[in-house]
Image 1 (cartoon, rainbow, N blue to C red):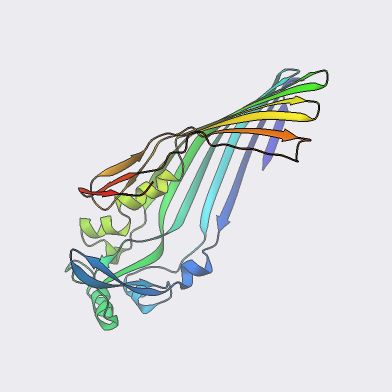
Image 2 (cartoon, rainbow, N blue to C red):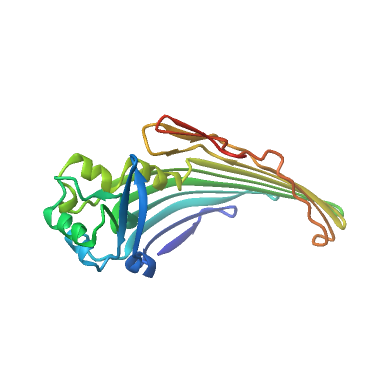
Length: 284
């Protein structure tokens, strides 16, 4: 449902509310894999069990269901001058039962459900993990867009600023009872590391500046993009912060399409990873 109210000749107020869903993919339902890993110097077999398997049922994993969302937004558009348009929108999105891959449960853990440990022993695997409707999240933010267009005879100037401020939080982790026998098992189901990956999908801020100047058949322009800071965790307590970066692209076009040159002036790559007090140098 959406509505719009024309407050004046230059101002429109708009709002919308909607619901949505995403069905679990065939891969999330049917994916099955057994692979070998090394942990603490020991070789272990890891099983990613399909959702319909006896192993998943022994773990108390329900059948995968659709992810459900509720979305709401309100904002306005304002023609501030004949050349300047401003739009500001606030939004909120709640997602329930997001499908994620759990952590790896150790069959030697005495706090793990006995039926699950028995199934793992039958399959001769040491560790097991599952796809599950594991987490509910809420994401809220504000989008701001300022667009300026001006003509000077045969020449023209276009400027665009777009900004986004947002915040995502995890509302609830849906841990099956058979996987909640201890604090360690609850942490294994969706670890801090995996939670950081979910939250990193929504950087707290992003800005973009685009400028173009047209002179008859020639147009030149430049673009600035800023991505806010996100933090990911390795296997351990140490975190690696990814610092904000500002890519700068320049461009020039003849007849608008025949030539296009873009240069990233500030390429930044991660060169050092610090995971659980182990320092690794990566080529970069």
